Image (cartoon, rainbow, N blue to C red; front, side, top):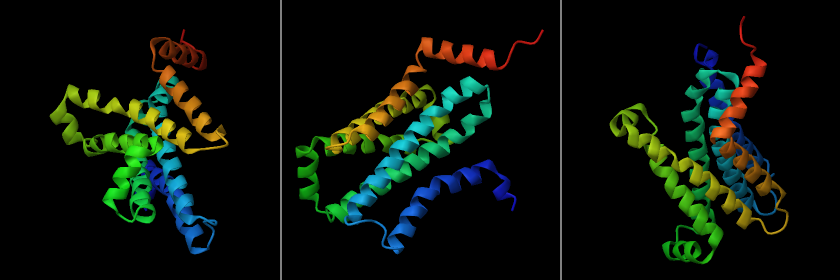
Length: 205
């Protein structure tokens, strides 16, 4: 019971809801006419959502002054990686049947696969170095390495944008969110967040 009073436990359960939904739909025959495509799209979308939510932690901390939000960032990032792994595993297993030659041809010939594979490859060292021991070992290099998350998120949006053939509304929406999250990290964006925070919390006389 003590674990359920921990906010991280509730956050973990929340992050697992998309997976539980997929399992429930699969057991009930609700994955549509093309289950493989449904699973691939769903896991990829949640990987991208996870990245965007992870990137929102710092602006939210600056806006609210709640420094404790930072303690959730690593978990959110690891769940984004978890769904990216499911996305990639679905492609390898259910789509390509672990055929190395077919996978290599796909990566080279289809640009959205190339971009998506690049994003996933860049995510691996970030997940592998997300613990405190690696933070201490890498020192300042850790922060430089983890700035790759910005590039990974951009590649994720491009991957989604190039995948969709007709209605671009959803990938463009994610692209707009990412642009906003990157903009508020620029000096003027930080100043805007600080001004908004000051208006919410008037200075004490």
